[in-house]
Length: 238
Image 1 (tube, rainbow, N blue to C red):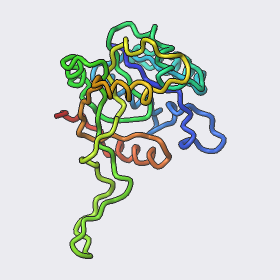
Image 2 (spheres, rainbow, N blue to C red; image 1 turned 60 degrees about the vertical axis):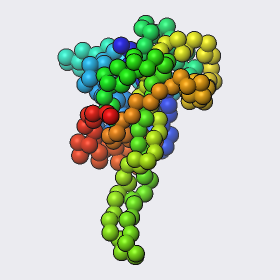
Image 3 (cartoon, rainbow, N blue to C red; image 1 turned 180 degrees about the vertical axis):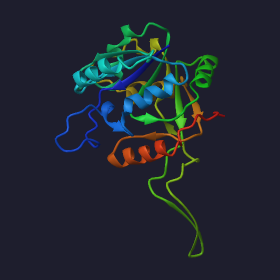
Image 4 (cartoon, rainbow, N blue to C red; image 1 turned 120 degrees about the vertical axis):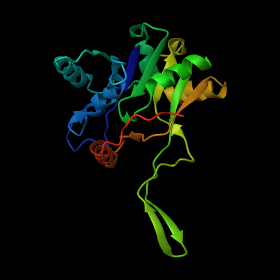
């Protein structure tokens, strides 16, 4: 099954001054973030990757060409340049012909979670709707204090908000969702997820473990801490 990774972003809030690099190639614990994402899929047997590039796609292609030379890699890995300014849904429209099967997996290049992909895929096959997204618990921005009067009874450093669910961007999608999408300017969340959700055509696979997204330098540092602590373990989703 094809795993499509949207990797066209600039990562301007992550790059240092004067650094030109696609977001997908920004390193996390010594590896580009996109490699970390691919490892999640490959570790569960999904290793046929289509990388959808945009900003500085030539840099992404150069890295991919070198990465393919990794001994005993065994992954299929291709890059398609969809232009630096194309929006997310339109990037997918431009690579539709590169997706041979009726169902494909989709994610972004900047989020990590050990989602049980095989269980999510079975869930998708059972419910019959065209899109499954992975619902995840976000982290608090700040540490949480439990108070007893004015005494601090407990301090919790940025716990998961188990009362909230957000889109974790690990999708399973029927390819015909891409039919009719324009080739420029259409947004995946606004122009695809919103109307299909309103029509009852999007289902949520709930991941109860850790999920992190790398949008800022602070996020990157926190993600590195989590990786070094071994916190991205495969969870049995309920």
